View 1 (cartoon, rainbow, N blue to C red):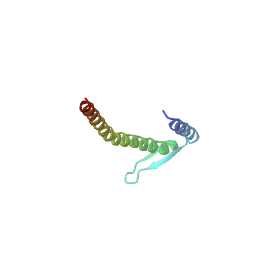
View 2 (view 1 turned 90 degrees about the vertical axis):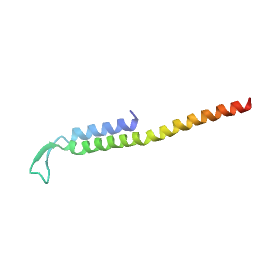
View 3 (view 1 turned 60 degrees about the vertical axis):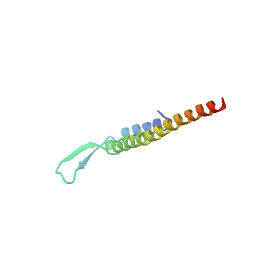
View 4 (view 1 turned 30 degrees about the vertical axis):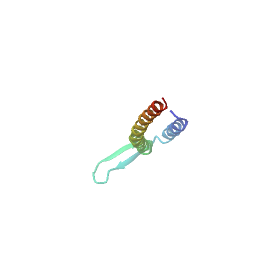
Length: 87
């Protein structure tokens, strides 16, 4: 866990402690209303956004890792050919 993640976690914890009051959330097309703690309204979207960002980064990096592995294998083959040509 990085230092930035720890600082964000501490800030979220302090925010949660200070904002424990309930608020009413109305879902407009529905007639249903929920009473939930205020900190959930702020922290849940942050967690969802962080998770989506991590998954997106993981998916994007997998293609780069695949290309890097292919390039590494190709470089190794070229080194072997150079070695053969020197002998």
